[in-house]
Image (tube, rainbow, N blue to C red; front, side, top):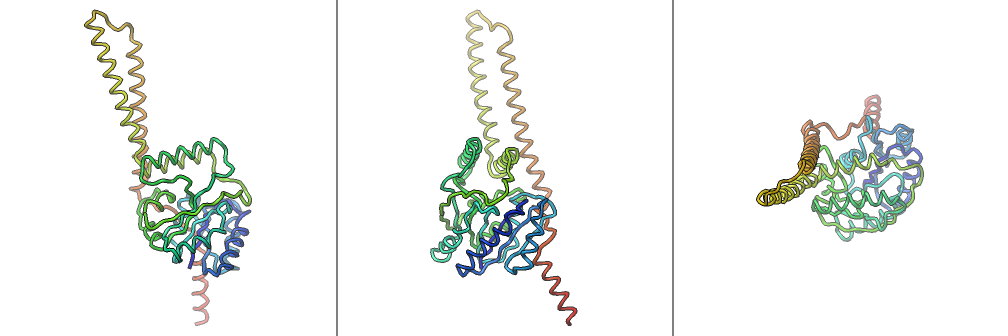
Length: 319
C-alpha cells in the first residue's frame, strides 16, 4: 500500500481538488493507497474540508495540529502515522505533478529503488532574488555537508525502511529534504517541471525563507563556525603584516603617525568577536531547543482515531 502525505497550511482552495486528482490517478493505476492530509494549524477552513472528505472517503485521513508547527513537523507527523509499504510526500498546491507517482512506484517496485527523488528540471516562475537566494543556500549546504540538494524538492517516494530510519531520528529541529538524502539507501531521480499553483498564494515570504535557511544550515552543518575560523586566520595574517611594518618603521627611526590604524584594527577585531559570539549563541540556542526534548508537533485531532472511538462505542452499544 502507498501512503501519500500532503502537508497543508491555509489551503482551503486546494484540498478538494488535490484529493480528487491524486485519488483519480492512483485508482486508475490500480494502487491501494491512503491519502494523509496534515493540517499545520490552518486559520481558514482547511481542516473542516479535510474532515468532511475523510468522512466520505475511508482512504482519506486527516491530522490536525494544535497550532502551526511548520512544514517539517507536518511531514514527519505524516511519516510517523502512515501505514503504507512506501510513502510519497507531495505539496498541496499541485506544483509537484502527481502524474509522476505511478512512475515513481514503478521504479520502486520493479527496479528496486528505495528512494525516488523528484528533482526540478527548472525552478519555474521565481524572482531573480529568490533564485539567487536558493542557489546560495544550496551551495552552502553542498560545500559544508555531504548532501547535494541542487534541484532537490520535498517531492519523493520512500520505502518503509527509509521511513523507519527517519522516524528513529531523535532531533527536534529537522530538515526533511536533507535528512531523506543523508540516510542513504538505493536512490534514483526523476525530473519534473514546476507547475503553477492550482489556487491560492504561496505561504513563504523573505523573512520565513531567511529563518528557514538559518535553521537548516545551523542544524545540518557547521559552516557558520568555519566562517569564524577563517576570519580569525585572516585577521591573524593582517596583524602579522601590521606588526612587521611597525617594527621596520621603528628601526628606520620612524613611527606610525596617529591612531587611525589602531582604531581600524580595534573596530574590525571587535566586529569579528561580536559576530563570533552571535554565531556561537545561535548554536547554543539550538542546543537549548534540542535538550528540552519538546515534541516536534502536537496532534489535536486524528480522523482515524475518531473513527476508531466511534466504532468502539458502536460495538459496545451493540454488545
